[in-house]
Length: 235
Length: 298
Image (tube, rainbow over all chains, first blue to last red; front, side, top):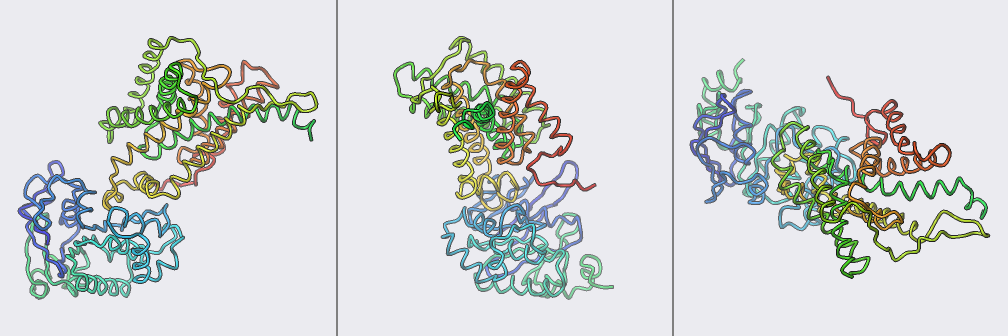
């Protein structure tokens, strides 16, 4: 369970997050929605320790993540698939996956086996350099690399970006399936509100760094004003 | 065949390779640091010299040659790690000129300290290999057991470093930290530790170069590594700072060029060999001969 309480972040004079609070629980997908510049990515980067907040706190279970280095937060069982997927192009598919497993107690050979079973396309390309992968394959690899360490929490930053509609739809279903079968706490940041709301249990809407709405995903999805003004779902 | 081995052409090949492997080691050590921290370590030669002097002092107390090699490498690694922690770490994210200035200063300090402790006369370590050249039908072959040892040791170290980076978990984490530090952190890699280890590895490789130099007939003196550093630096630049294989090839190329200029022109202009190669290389492939050509998008 991730609890973010009253979190504020500034980049110089610019306030990127203003008193943001949210809770994400195991087995549930929590969607974080909003336009460009709403602070969605900053929220994930602050949870991961890449950005230091000016106020508020973040807990993973009972552990405060504040001032903890990113690599140690990862080692607590939090996997963050960053914006742009963070696939290391100069390494092979297999080396990317091995890298994901190194910091955990997972047996690397077993972990690779499990991910290749989950994503057969990656198994076929295991010796290929990642520069040769398509967008969809990269997203698969980024997911597999996050999952191989058997995390408790999964942060996903715009996983649908640049993917074809069918691929996006499959990806969303996969996220939901993984979340429920592995009892993962998933925080899903998306500009594609429609796709995200289809699988999310809860949703938080950010606007200019502040929470403007949060709650049950269906309630958020049904709110005409939210749809019109913040989610871009009404033409 | 035997007359071929004793020909002056082969003399120069052997001599060039023997010199070149030293340059290659220094170039390799520069590339390791450049790849992990994007710092051009101008004190690399001086650090290697200093570490080797500590080893030399121990040999004066009666330890064996191999212990001296080991001590020099270990001292080099400790010095490298400490340098990263104390001098370089505060400079990450600052302008690139800052670490260069600091390391040039550190170079001067190390050479001054070494001179005041050990004086500026050259010292040698007696390697357990004969420096007497082989003969073939009464003619000299410009190879001695020591030269062969020097070349084999250097190649062995290079293969070891390559294997470490290519096949081990540590190597994978070192590569990831250099290629994508933020992603590596997100995957739980302790990137700061990797940077320190990168400097340690690099300084250890550099120390081997100074040990080989000290084992040769001319020995080692405190500013001895300056020239070697320049050649190693050119080798790394010619090969492309991103490419370990390029650095090694660059070192050999410069060793050979200097040797041939020395033989066919004049010993006085031999150091020009490296400079000529640098100029030619920069004209043909400014990004380095062995780097993949990456166009910068504008």
